[in-house]
Length: 270
Image (cartoon, rainbow, N blue to C red; front, top):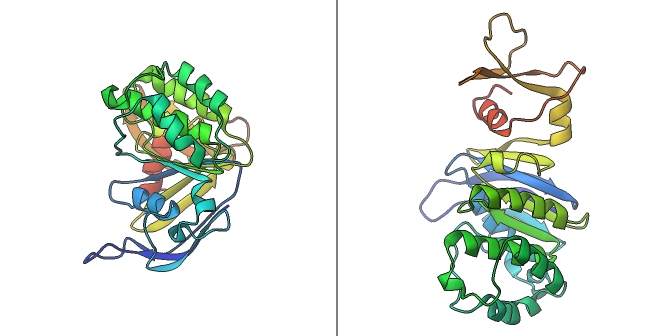
């Protein structure tokens, strides 16, 4: 559904951000896109969404070239950006104006999500808090039923209960025909909902793996001491001793610590 081949991109008067990057994401996936500040996560999302044009290489999304901005492409992709502005209208007014742009928009689905997010549809968007406006955009994105949903830092501005709601609502809303691509620094907010992780560093994809495969091959644990631990791949101190990453033995599985995994990857321990 999303195919990137030999992508190169740079901003004016800057060194290349991506050079010969390739990536494929099929339907039915919720993918976590991780990387340090400046790694290019938001830029990659903008390229996929058709807001930027590659310098070299090819991107296709649902068989369309994003930057050509074909109306059929735009009707089946929705992006929730990290930073956004909304018109000075009510939620009802926004729905009336913009939901017709998305042929598969589900009004009842939006109403249900809005209810769970405790959104008042008569409220003026410009008078809502940042967190409430973010919840509105998430609700609209999910109700659009677009085949591709691109979420850039979706949990920024959400309080702890809202983050829990977000995870529950997202998992319950996405179908096998959709792809959800989530870029975030808040890895603990998504570690239970993604089924694939992609890590970008220095303009390249340095790691991509299914969560199921990670769980089968790696074991995450917390121990009081690392003395005598064999095949230790990575460790960090924690209030309870040490968080460790070792090869899985096949006897049992552990919950994936996505933050520990990310640090191990970027420190080149995996």
